[in-house]
Length: 417
Image (cartoon, rainbow, N blue to C red; front, side, top):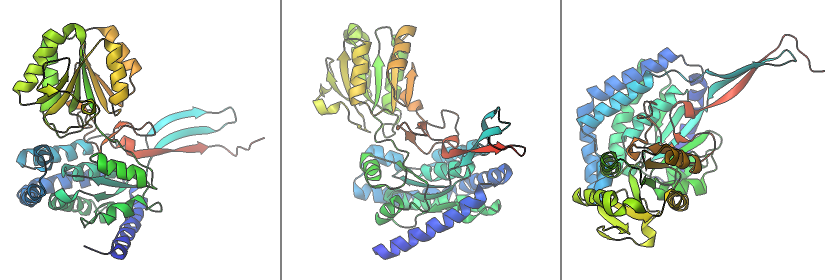
């Protein structure tokens, strides 16, 4: 445990190095950024045994802390998940470079030619909890968008994140980019988080990725701008015009594929006309799969309490409720949702259009599992997180969302009358 002065000095030095690196990255070529990510991907695969070994230490730490099965699942790395990290790095490297892209272009009667072009944000601070793959995702996306990044991983993933970070640095060295492009805070001390939130001179935006406690702390205390989502309270509404086969498959996947991710369904809403038939069938499917269904108006595992609605369980638990119609479902989601992801299961185009028009969550889906709420599944290669605010970045935060823009104005001796 370092004292406050040491932590403050450490973070100030990291901020200074990141700011210097960001100045060089702003004009780094696509080729060098691509080379860095390819070399990093190679290093991750070559060092996979080391990463699994480091992860074993983190899993032991997690068991000692009494983490839930879902949280342990988020923390665990095996060869398959390491292959996913490699694929994510390569997917980012294969994207179009967002930096310098012309977003709009026009001529003015004054003779000025104006372009709005993408430019890096500068320095991004990412604070995340147990998922060690975020180290690679965040590092890759920030680099691709021309930003330096300071990563502060969770105490649970300390060793895994360190092993992955070493591979990213290897990639930077191979491409002759500044090593300080991607820095990992080398301490579990929570004081480092508080320092990051106040580094207004060196960090341009903070992206928190974790549970309600972490994100709430960041939103309360940050002096730096924040891209955040507080919770992933995702709803699935089964309309009276739902296709039974599709609905049963989608709901089961939305809840059970991985319960510990923010795109996991946390509340099932069922139209009253199908409550006793398809609705009950879906509840029975969930119970058979080991899900505790806290229900109202359906024969669930237990009767739902009021506070089950609006809860992010991140576990094999789902709240379920019968609603009178689509407008009742929309009203429920407006009251209890977190503006993350909602799905409607229906073959009725008008019902789907009404759902899409009248809800304003970051992601709205039709006849698809909420587990697709992921930057990789949106073709972004990876994501830093899902932003549920309404300013700048919204939904999956990929490389393009980690840029700002500037105006380039050209004249020909043009003066203003």
